[in-house]
Length: 319
Image (cartoon, rainbow, N blue to C red; front, side, top):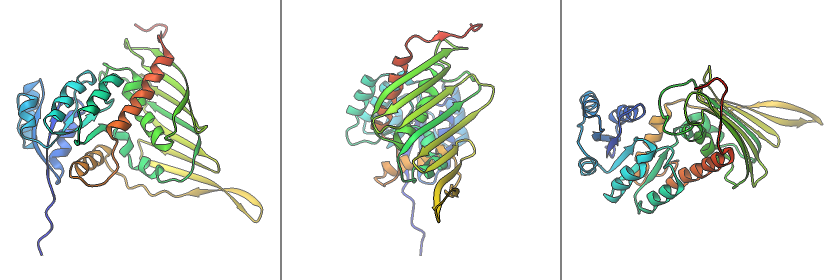
């Protein structure tokens, strides 16, 4: 009996920069994808990638829209509405890199133009296998602590560290505890750029959960960890290692103690997992996806944090 054929979705990529080129690489490898076209203002870069990955570089978004059913939008945030909006108007499903837009007004316009098309947002850390394992845990968190520290790289400097890095963890926090934000306390500092490079935030949710988040893009080392404390259990997650350790309180014959909780994690490349789920949703199949609505919520919380910080101070001795 012949093997069942895999349904392939014609997909394209708009923007082939630091992240877009990885989308191109993975889509060219996926059996369920037909990488039909890519487009970038830097035509020589797009043509080189197209030759490497067996696709074509086209000149305009209109050219790309005629060839695809779905597209990844990996352009600067300020251009998300213009690019993704045009694709949606042409009937193309879109995965827009995070944040979904620079403002809630633009995010709302993008969602309004979606119709019955899929709008996904590229919160790739949500697809980290360790995060997916954590989301299977039953219980309500009382306290969450998240650190996302990175060394400086000259990328994504069109947005501050809250919209660049912390927004990943805001989306995951809302997935762990979907209750509304009750209170925001935050501080931030400019160090090497004209935008926030470090931010620390304390969020209180309506459920009573308190979350403390720190994000930095000027640290000496790379740290990405999440800790969740529940009523009688505790989980520590390492994003980089894709590992999660759990412990729970037990009472045996009146004696109270702690025992480990085993959560199975099948390691994998989060971006590849994200793209597979996006393609599955485009093919009307089920699967976890960060939707446009969820991406908008993460943006709303990030903007609340920026409003709470106000005018950030400049670190002493920095330019």
